[in-house]
Image (cartoon, rainbow, N blue to C red):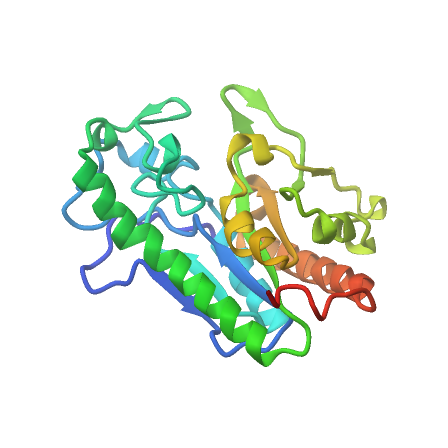
Length: 270
């Protein structure tokens, strides 16, 4: 089943969803770009349906993979329910691309002349609730686990960006703290036997401003953290989404097992 396009959500819908909040696994998952929904009152931001269903508005397939990973890992999952074109929850409020006026080839007319008050309203109604929900999940998990939970964020990327084709299958991203990324890249689940192109900090890295969630909720707390970026044509249907979720859940499990016996119990308990 291909990812269904969503353009608007009803007023009662929350801007963030916590899936499997009682999960007892060793990980908390986040999917910042889970939806391309535009809140009522903002129309289409002046964009065509094609733009609103493209990768510039969300990460196609990422939520389905993250949901299945949450099931397999018994992990809480915090998912954004508003398009990143309205507010990109993986960017701090001061970042120019938190509410972009342009994304790749698309101008975003609805973001072109935002006032300070309008920007502040989006921060308060979209960014802050998402990060409060994620912080709450991590706090609860930290207080109730023997081992402090790792933070893993799930994203997808387009196979063609600005006219350049990408052959990478999976990127494992990190900021200054590379512990979990190192362990993931060393797992058999992501090893060369599977014929996958897996790289560190590709197709994006810290210099591109994509590690905000990792830094805020991971590195700042000495909590294990990593971002997984899957090429979206590899997760375009339900069969592939489940297969990738199983592969990534196994990689996370193998990575955490490899880190067991170090100071993992103390990590994240600031």
